[in-house]
Amino acid sequence: MRARRRELAQAVPDAAQRAAGHLPLDALPTFGCFSGYHALGDELDPGPLVRRLAGTGAMFALPVADFADAPLIFRAWDRDDVPVPDLYGVPAPPPTAKVVTPDLIICPLLAFDRAGARLGQGGGHYDRTIEGLRARGPVFVLGLAYAGQEVEALAAEAHDQRLDAILTENGYMPVSKD
Image (cartoon, rainbow, N blue to C red; front, side, top):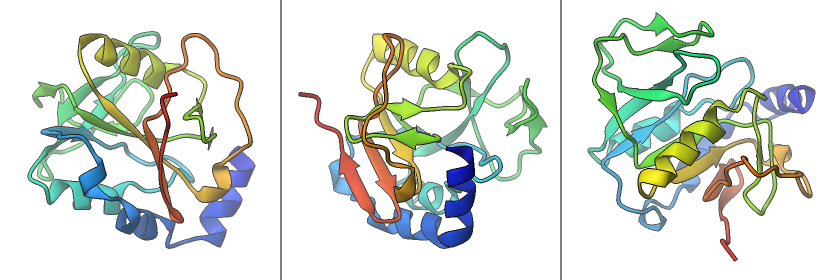
């Protein structure tokens, strides 16, 4: 799937902008804080989507990995902040940034299916994080991917957290909870 994503990044260079344009803001639940991610390698760049969501006035946050087997935390991001690498070297808000709880999470992935299953990088960070957040209240998880990352079906394990919707350069796909 990593090779496939690499191919898609080359084949569809405007995918991020196209995907952002497909997001129906009125289909999202109310949110006051949302998180994006810092794209690594060939992950679909959330920048255009983040700019669109920031236009709603909601607070923007980025995930931070502090410990290998712990949930992610989210810190508010200000464009004037100097990023600090987290445990895995991913640029993140500085430790002085406010810790926040997002209502909407933009989630990267390697593959997805129409049932909302998501294949991540394998560390389980997003699954642990989403599970913890959902135990405290509603959180909407939006998978951001190239359309070509869709597969027929993914085998989900008990700890895997389903996406609420998927956004690609071809459109927005809500996930049925039935």
